[in-house]
Length: 320
Image 1 (cartoon, helix red, strand yellow):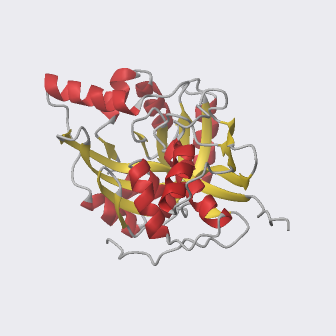
Image 2: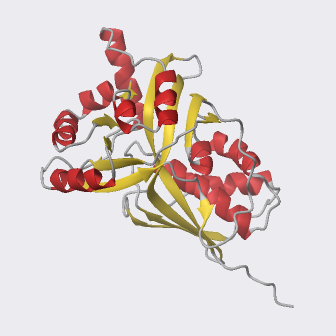
Image 3: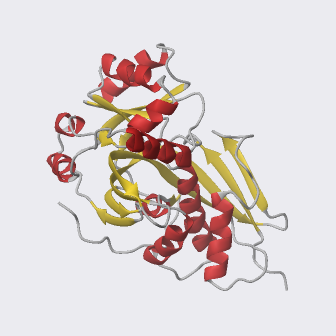
């Protein structure tokens, strides 16, 4: 009797921007304690998982030809982690296809997004009885940003960023994203921050509470005054041209600009959708970045495209 092969499953997953990223000093375990406010944006990757006799990984779009397609790729590590969690001891006979719109090594958690999408896709493909909270536990073992990519929305992240509490966001916020010519290594950026702090005392951003209050108010002008990232000084130190990019975005009409995460992507908050289009057009001709994208947020986390998404959980309490 022939086995029924389930159809492929495609998952759409968002990029993230850090509205607030406070980095504490290095911990004994080699990580930094973080307090961050994430927002998921409409810039997405799509990940398709399918049963196959030819397992492996394919990548198209951003990073094509430069991102590894072997077992070191975070998406494939997600395959192995979920298989181990549910007791599948044989090699997973799946093919994972990444169609990437999120820049690689761009500070927008593209690799983490792909891992989260792979977990959601496989849970559906394998018809697993597993909650999104269970998937988040697996996700936390893969990387600090993977749990947020599962949930999306807007959230306060602590620890390494993997401990999440949803944050109330009353407004659709409009962004322009400027991709740099090449990526930045996250460990190198953290290392540069440690070096800068050892040599002096670069300014640290304030508390996250005003950011949460601005999100609850829904006022982009109030939020713009509060965008902050302790890693920005380190990213700019390693990539001085980012100063010009940040200045160009604000000169083009954005309310404010910030380096997202460890960079080098620069994210510009705009008053409304029309202003975002105008800022993007001007930035595109300014010669300060490789590519410009318009996005909005918050949006949901990893979701099956065109079908029910089984691994769900009731949202935790809202942080106001």
